[in-house]
Length: 115
Image (cartoon, rainbow, N blue to C red):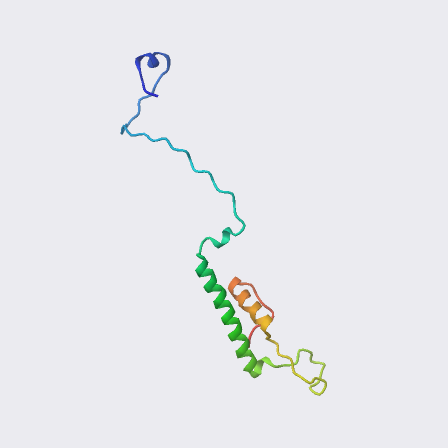
């Protein structure tokens, strides 16, 4: 609204301290509704693919190192003797190696750790 003498008689206008002469009106943008996969937005899709690939490679390498390490082969049940078992089970199998790498990324603990 511009200040005119007729309007000034009816309404008490306060004069601005500083007036640049440029005024803009715009509509505030509407917020988008939250998406299901919004947590993936900080990184691009290519970075998430690299993180997934690194997780798979580390899990497979961990499994292979544990497979050849003599410290991973032990009896899970101390009551059983070596004669009763045909095959000594390996503690760090492929499923546990994938779980261990995810637990390491998420900073949670894991019961079975590589030796």
